[in-house]
Structure formats: structure tokens, C-alpha cells
Image 1 (cartoon, helix red, strand yellow):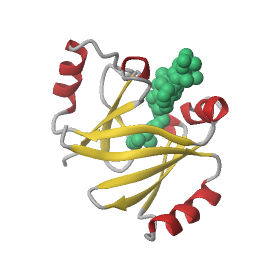
Image 2: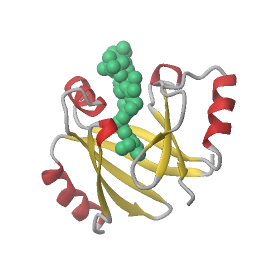
Image 3: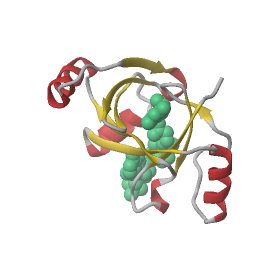
Image 4: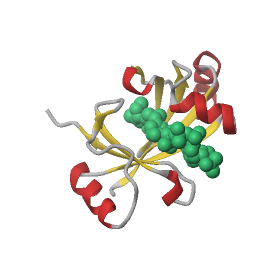
Length: 134
Ligand SMILES: CC[C@@H](C(=O)O)C(=O)SCCNC(=O)CCNC(=O)[C@H](O)C(C)(C)COP(=O)(O)OP(=O)(O)OC[C@H]1O[C@@H](n2cnc3c(N)ncnc32)[C@H](O)[C@@H]1OP(=O)(O)O
Ligand SMILES: [Co+2]
């Protein structure tokens, strides 16, 4: 794993949280993107080598809606940048971790992603990210 690619933060309202994080980080959001498959709206901020990803649910079935209902707003996941996501998924499966998707899926900001179940990672939802190279 090369670095922490982003930290995902679940928010109730992007309209409220986007300007708040712009003030907090003293930097403008560089990208907003809806990811229909995850039922989320995302907003990204660069913070040095890593990023902050705000996530607002766009449907009640979204993982973000369920998370906020149970735990409230806050840190939802940590994403790690990997060179070869399929090789990393295979390695982690071999180590006994539970993958939440069998094949990499399209994430936000030009990434292929895969999640690991938090029950096997000390309660931390982990995302693997590989940049899509064209
Ligand atoms: C925009 C795309 C992408 C990117 O490019 O960056 C994203 O970041 S998308 C982010 C949103 N998508 C996901 O989170 C997908 C992966 N998540 C899941 O598949 C599910 O959320 C889950 C982790 C399998 C949980 O779903 P489910 O079992 O249906 O929900 P429960 O509410 O019943 O939770 C079960 C259990 O897990 C605990 N939990 C849930 N979410 C988290 C979390 N983020 N961090 C830590 N723990 C989490 C939850 O509290 C339950 O625990 P117990 O109550 O102890 O059973
Ligand atoms: Co993410």
C-alpha cells in the first residue's frame, strides 16, 4: 500500500459541510462527483499527499445513510492507494480478510475501488484504490 489516498467523511448535508471544510482546510474543493452505484455525492479536497472525501447519501439505501443513522456524521473509511488492486485483493483474501466486492468497481475521482469488511479490520472500513490508467 503506497499511501493513505483519502479519508472518507460521512456528512448529512453537502451544502453545509462543503463550505465548512473549505474554511477548515483553507482550500477549495477541487471536484464534486456523484457515484450512482454507491448512491453518494462526493466532494474532494487536497491535503498534502492525501485527500479528504466528503460523502452525502443520495438514497436511503446508501451505506452512508445507514452509517449516519447508526453512528452519526464522522469518519466513515480510510482509503489506501495501491499499484495493482487485483493483486492486493488476492493477497488480502489469502490473509483471511473479507472483501466486500469480488471484482474492483468504479469509484470516484478516476479510481477502481474495493472495500474490506470492518469486522475483520478492528472496526475500520478500509477501501483500496487504484488509479485508472488510460
Ligand atoms: C464514491 C465511491 C467510493 C470512493 O471512490 O471513494 C466510496 O468511498 S463509496 C463509500 C460508500 N460505500 C461503502 O461504504 C461500500 C462498502 N460498505 C458496505 O458494503 C457496507 O456499508 C458495510 C460495511 C458492509 C455495512 O453494511 P451493512 O451490513 O448493510 O450495514 P449495517 O449498518 O448492518 O452494519 C453492519 C456492521 O458494520 C458496522 N459498520 C457499518 N459501516 C461501518 C463503517 N463505515 N465503519 C465501521 N463499521 C461500520 C456497523 O456498525 C455494524 O456493526 P455492528 O452493529 O457491530 O454489527
Ligand atoms: Co472513498
